[in-house]
Amino acid sequence: MKVKWMTIVLTAVIGLSGCSFLEEVNGTIDYVNQATDYVNEATEFANEVPAMAEQAITDTQALADLETRLLEMKQEIEAFNELEAPNLAEDLHQQVMEQNNRALEGINVFLSNIENGELDSALLENTELFTTLQELTELSNQIQQLGE
Image 1 (tube, helix red, strand yellow):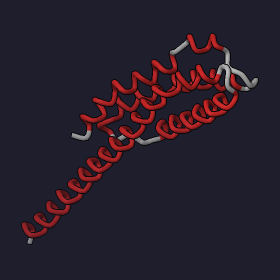
Image 2 (tube, helix red, strand yellow):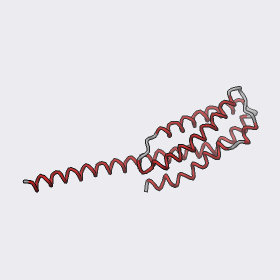
Image 3 (spheres, helix red, strand yellow):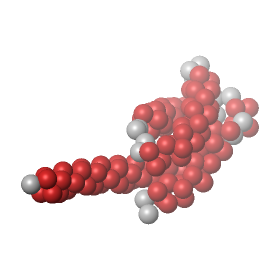
Image 4 (cartoon, helix red, strand yellow):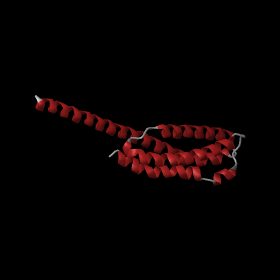
């Protein structure tokens, strides 16, 4: 009877630990997919916004479009920062969040400059915002490796 009971308990323990492992794997895959989408969005933003910003210096419609794009990216960054990273990706997520916080600072500088209805051309010389977002693409290889 003891052997039968021990077998049942052992099977239950193994089954429960297997479920935990499966949940961790699924969580990692979900995180990798979301992080990859986010990095792709940040890369697209970093590629398109410098030209938009240059055009926004002289074009009020381009300025409005730029403001909209900056606000959208700000929301994307904040949403990503709220993601719960799986244990396997905690360090990487922290690195991305640090880059995100630097990017948010840059976005806020642009947005506060736009509030008066124009964009100062001197602001374009400070490209830290775009550099920060492009550095995120370097982290994309590490994110992809999590999914493998």
